[in-house]
Length: 301
Image (cartoon, rainbow, N blue to C red; front, side):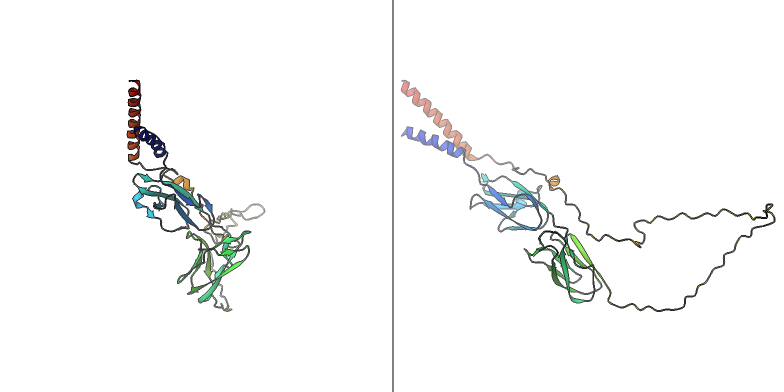
């Protein structure tokens, strides 16, 4: 009976030693994407609870409980982990997601007129199909979001009806709330040109009389004073832009490198309490060695 106990103990020790804690997998992986994405978290144990956060320097107790796929529209670090008990939890993991929306989506025109329900068109000036889902158009009194998974082919247009009160602008924004294009207000009133006589008044400026008596030469040529020509004033950025074209291409701020703001490593774990399982393994190993020595000593006698 004692031999059977020793054999079971020796079999139990390797199994307990190599047993792994719960783990969790995030899909899609870290990377750069050009449209909003859904993040799914899958733990290796069904009874595990999974949590997530967007703050690398936050606390685990401030994380959100994962219940369904998470919609991500902005570039962000993503923290996640799973737990069954205080002695069985996964490592705290981190993915980095960078969302770069194409710069080829614009309004088809530069101005808008009228009021009420108006239609504006979006055009894709690029050479690839673009997912414009979750892009939105905003006026002073309305906002319309384009349905997800809406694909706009190269040089094709997408029309949107929006309430427009007039005398204001209409803005096109990407899903991360960045302003990509703007429609300015254009008045529909006709301007009448009236012709009238223009009365020109001249202001008499006193002139300095040049004496021909005191300043004369033998050929009686009067002395001519030096004339100072004012210097030309350079045109600055704030000067009127007459004869110049203005680049209306939306200026997109470069997306910062997410790795520069990461404050924990991708596989960093918090400190954990000692697992009681290792205490039992140590006791069983000690009992096994002691029993084996007792058995050998008894055989020698």
